[in-house]
Image (cartoon, rainbow, N blue to C red; front, side, top):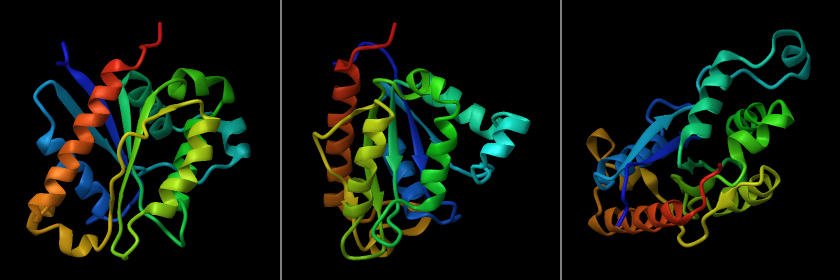
Length: 192
């Protein structure tokens, strides 16, 4: 049993207002136990990465705020869509900004428990996108959780009015996934 509040950050890799991945994070937030919280973040306001802009203007405020939130969180839930069998460009761009400057990677990502989830209107879920994240998470020296998988296919029929999950079996799958990830986060060593 967790002894204190476990704070998670959930980042949706989609900018769409009615994003299935943002809906998945909202559904996760709604069923978390009272000993955990989930703050949902999006990639809105993060510009395309440009080293000249970084050199001239530094880190954009939207990036700095997200870096601070990730750094302060106990764990991160990445909700990834799958575009053309891979990571959406907007999501990879956000992570590329979050890894700048390279000296911040350890502070923001080093040893951070991370889990991948995803929802897609297609029939294969987000299998390829989640697999494509693995070298990125390794490069950032995160602590990925591999104890569960959640790749929702046919998301347009999974979510009902207001973004709630309609199927009790999928709701239970999400609940089990979250319990496993929270246990992993709680058991993971905390940075000094």
